[in-house]
Image 1 (cartoon, rainbow, N blue to C red):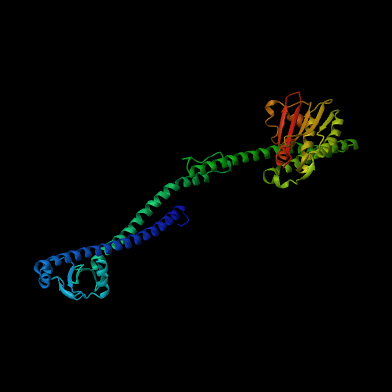
Image 2: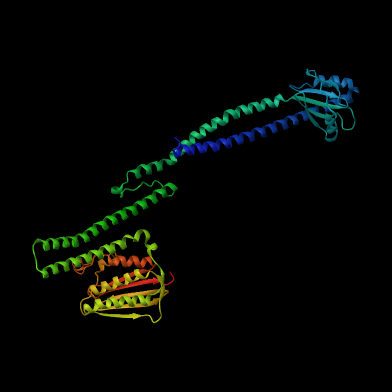
Length: 462
């Protein structure tokens, strides 16, 4: 029961509302009690002043206090109120005919208060009493009007009864309404939950319904859809990567197995065994290169930044070492490899081994795809706070339709020629990863039969 968000929200709402209603009920009750008692005092004071005024008029008319007591108290009878006239010391001199209890004995302090302020109030024997002087100029006595406190208590009792009944009723109705609203508000989440449960690795193309893209739930659904899109792309990329890797590994393994079977099929001469072993060695080296490249690419998505062992290094020296190594390959193929470096040393923070791998891959591609007698150029310069490395060749070039995909894993422009040259379509993918891991960028310009130019920009302040 309490595992439901809807139920917990309703309970929290009901709890907060209950505390608020109870606090409000107490506030209303005590405010109403103060108003009731204040109005009772005001009404009693007004009645007492009326009695005093009528009494003084009667005294002036009949010239007799006793006669005035008899006439006034006989005429002024108020329901649920008792009237009493006292002497200057507070002793009862006359009282109304409806007075059935003990006569009011008013202590001196309220009498003094009434003389000073024109009115005073006292509670005695369950009665609220208002006292006013009969005359402000003489010490004739006081008019006292009393009313039972039960009159106000009855009103407060009715108010308490209404609050006792109203607060739970309001709480019940609002809790039911809150449960309904919580259920209605959370229904899109329940829908998203049902739709998400139907999404599997085989059905990543499914998406959640976005009922209102402007509210929080709509934005959550849109975010989940974006996540599903990225997951779908990642799964497809992974499947394609596995398929391509399997395809690349299948050919050299088939060659190795076939050559071994042929070599073991019958007795052969030493020269024939040497030829078989040489072929096996070439295919084994090709397998080693593919596995090494796959291992490096496998590190890219998760911990690429962590594997970089950055330290200050001279890019001039790194490029020079790589150019000397590539010079051997170029000479074997009858190519000219020329370099052009900036006169000042270019120092950056980077991984020496990975940068060498990146440069050698670019030079290796340039040598592989440049016909005999061609040229390969390596240029290093400083451009707008970055180190710019350009590897240009006069080779076979790349068709325009393939330029956007040459950095994809296992992509080869001419698959038959690439396989013949020992390529697996991983070199440029590794190059791009190493460049981006160093915070740089790579660009290529090429056209068929006019060579290619790869430009690498590496920030110097990374």
